[in-house]
Length: 161
Image (cartoon, rainbow, N blue to C red):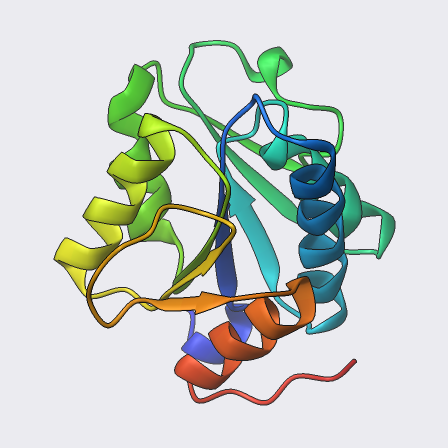
């Protein structure tokens, strides 16, 4: 059995395939910061926010896990280094949330809202960046840097820049 020292921190980035230019830019920056922090990015593996975050992470030398809704690894965006084929549609949202130690939601539609709800139900650390307004203790932030810093802080981890 492998010890936990071999495992790298996995941070989930959630958001819709249909995103604003600002959201895509912020997702790219979040992806870069996750890689620079030494963590692995997990996402839904498709386009929009998922692809922008994947590209940022990949271009910064990081690894990207794509939890795919369909049955074909080739459906993943080109920056996914580890595609996970589920053939489960939206039910894959549970797998993504369970896989991540913490999550950052950037913009997003109802699929993102379902992932937020699952994260809240499971007690996962969650940061909202221009995403759904949730009235509880969920942390809303204003910048990609603040999002990644907050996730590492919520997990009690230091990260390098």
